Amino acid sequence: MTALGILYPGHSAEDDYPRIEQLLGSDIRVDLVHTDVGEDTHRVDALRGLGAPERLAKGVEQLRLAGAEAVVWACTSGGFVHGWDGAQEQVRTLAVTAGMPASSTSFAFVYAAREVGAARVAVAAVYPQDVTALFADFLRAGGLEVTGVRGGGAAGAAEAGAWGEAEVLALARAADTPDAQAVLLPSTALHTAAWLPALEEALGKPVLTANQVTVWEALRLTDRRVHAPGLGALFVREPTVQV
Image 1 (spheres, rainbow, N blue to C red):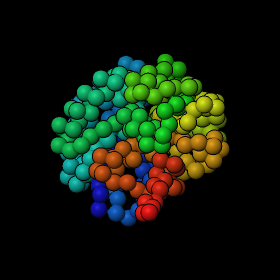
Image 2 (image 1 turned 90 degrees about the vertical axis):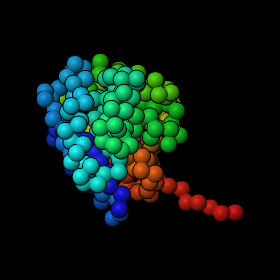
Image 3 (image 1 turned 180 degrees about the vertical axis):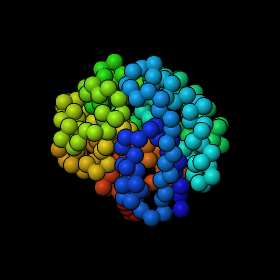
Image 4 (image 1 turned 30 degrees about the horizontal axis):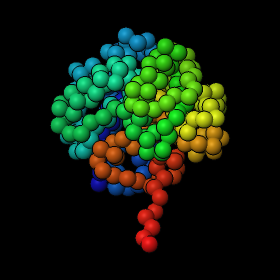
């Protein structure tokens, strides 16, 4: 059994995680602990406080007692608003506090894009435009080319969590560009786990979403690779062929 630890802010789209766990198989457990949000807003100053060390530390002990082997801070905006260096320091502090490998959804997007071979990506974010631009800057700092950027203008996580499949697809289509090799939807407050195959079929390319890449990143930290095509191209493992 591989136990994955997820620190998730508040309550919005956390029901994506049991769905993902079910699609991964019986030997993987996704343990989720909720962190305090404070003010639910996509305002930059509030987002910087969302991932404060003391907030994340409160959930770590519960994950440790549950036997988690790695922990991921499942809040994209609560990572990238600190910039590349600040987000790295956030993850380092989390790893020391938890006593286990740690990462965040922001970094998960960079590594997942590399995994699917996407050097050029389009960003379809529910955030206001100023916050969306900070995510695009973060991706560029990670070595990715951003070909298109679209912000959805959601005021906070509660609003994003109420979006349906049609709204998510419309945002993804609005952000997509012909030269983008993948489309990224960065909010963990957005429900996407049930719609990944349909989104990829509609856009004709890999789609990376926040809760999906968060779990993938936790698996990466524990050296697990899982074939689960119901979770999109990121989870499609090509069989080994011996010649």
